[in-house]
Amino acid sequence: MAFPPRDRPSREQPVARIGRAPMTTGRERSGPAERKSLAPRSATITIMIRAAFAAAKGLKRDFGEVEHLQVSAKGPADFVSRADIMAEKVLRSELARTRPEYGFFGEEGGETKGDGRNRWIADPLDGTTNFLHGVPHFAISLALEREGEIIAGIVYQPISDELFWAEKGNGAFIDTPNARSRRLRVSARKEMNQALVGTGIPQKGRGDHPAYLKKLEVVMGQTAGVRRWGAAALDLAFVAAGRYDAFFEFGLAPWDVAAGNLLVQEAGGLVTDIAGQPYALGGPSILACNTGLRDQIIGVLA
Image (cartoon, rainbow, N blue to C red; front, side, top):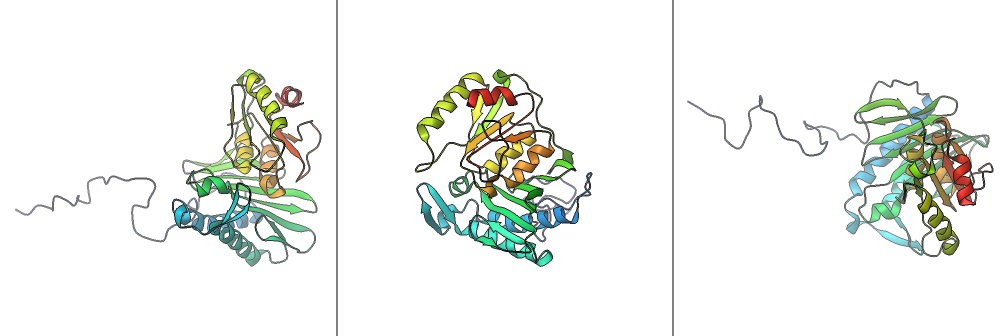
């Protein structure tokens, strides 16, 4: 009587899996599998998502191999990796295939003028320092600006496989391996002592550290906790998802916040500067929060 080899399970037996690797051989996907969306997506959002997935493929391949990456210094405590530059090139290329007339404004490659009406604003690797240290918290941020207004934005976290996306007037949503186009809403907390607040601590050579620490000290003393994860696009996405109740930071560039700004607003939140005045891309400070905490946190930061 023949028996199957002991080191090879039969086809009827379950096979143990580690991670989310495919059960069968085949082409590796660079983002969440194609899903039937429960929320309507425009052609623009579809193009943006596909471009982000294409860029994410290289980032996932390089992540965890940081010791082999080609890294050059940009400034004090600030680095740019080969993976960062290549991700932006992929974004540019993918977007140009379908919208060649649009401009492009990215962190690494500068600005390409387009038709004067439409401009992509991209951060191909938000959280570069995390990436370079093997911390799995970074994202691709991509927004579309039309005549000075952000009308679409996505933030994609390749490691957790979470896709946050929004279109102006149509709401904000999240796609995960376990959920399809779930509507995002900011939190409903109204008490500062229950609030979880995200922030960004100025790096070496940047910002006014003593002034920032004074504000941080007050926030820490009045809230349930403060988190500093080092990726502003994800911080804003977390506010939109109700994971954070508020987020504040100083000196962020347009590509850091363009997509996240729209996510928060479409999820029912507010985006201002820390004094409660209208926020403009590239402004000196940003505050994102739910409506119930707005006045309280502005008072604390002031």
